[in-house]
Length: 113
Image (cartoon, rainbow, N blue to C red; front, side, top):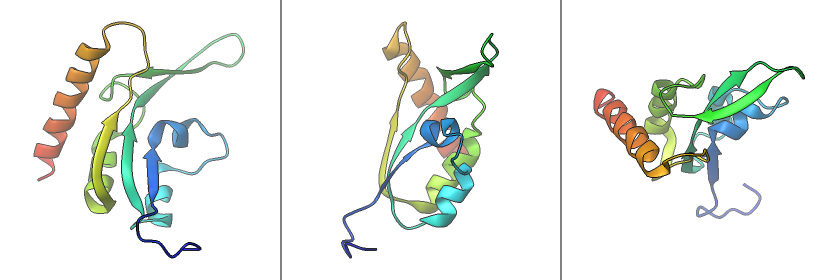
């Protein structure tokens, strides 16, 4: 709003929203800035237990604690730029992991039409 430029928008990054201990919910992001979401950066996380209280690992989109169906519903309503990318910064075969995640997203998109 301060720049008054329609080309300036937000990168929705659900992993960073979920990992930020002072952050809000994914829903609150879309409520606060519903018409400024230009890019979506998807990943999912799993909580793990450990000696120091645990932490998180990045996992496939369909396996983590973030409800991807809800996210895709919100993106369908609010994503202005129509750009969605998948982040999978894990060891192993990233091409196969990305293909599985892409097939999963396509299925969700089909379900939500």
